[in-house]
Length: 372
Image (tube, rainbow, N blue to C red; front, side, top):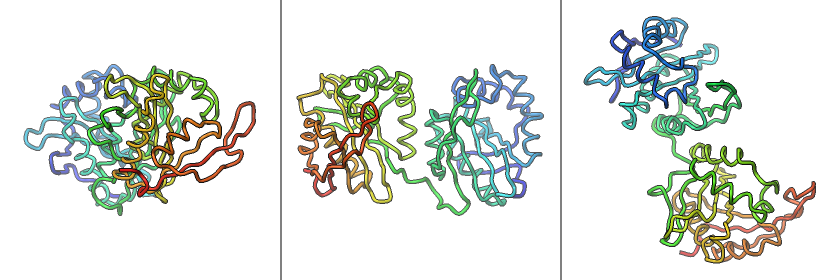
């Protein structure tokens, strides 16, 4: 690993040293609430004095200790758009950590992606073999940058970073190797077309932070709890966490968590999730539950059919399976209407109440079997 150049010219961005005339923009960008939320190591409040220290001492010290600290500038005007750098170098492993921030006036224009690609290319050209990019679990904009810049999801580092104001939070780890293919990483679970699925009667969209009350109401119902694993009612904190992290889990390719809506009224009537449990074999699992307002109207069947069609046509899944408790006849009817076939009974597969075990009836649907 050798020292990187002072300036890196790239498409749409210039990476250059911080200068004294960057102080005001650096202070404004790093005092921004979104920057403060996701980079908890920054002083808070962030002042021009902090920015002057960074420009005069912090950034040069980072470079002197084997890292890098660049201002991301507009190639045409040279105005500051953000910051990017390398930290925590491990020479023996040929490894470093890449991190960035984007000023509020530059967001939404691909600045972070362009800068990350440029710095990664420069780092690999100077001997780095592995780059890590660590994101706050709720910073899904940064996770999308990671994917667009060729970084692959590698896992979650639990309680790896202090939270501003106390406590600790997880970090999602994204990695790119020097010999990884160029270009964006293909998403295991792509976004929904136009952000939703609908047949005009029912609609599905990704779970978000505004769905906590509806999801809590749904998953606390006794008949829904009976089919949870384990069969215990979730706490409000668990539902809040599920809603906050739903997009991150989607981007990581773990699950597509959806709310089911009455298309006419927009009312939340249920939930549906697709868990990509076996990407290597092209298999996923589907699960769903409905509030009383959504039952007896065929909405669960419509929702499951829409999700299955998206999974087969857009995700490339070959087989979807589902499990129900033997007594859950209503769910079995939904599966059969969608086209699923019963494959058998798995004895004692699931944890039941009070330490018992309960059976699970297994259904499956192949891509060619979905009615069109």
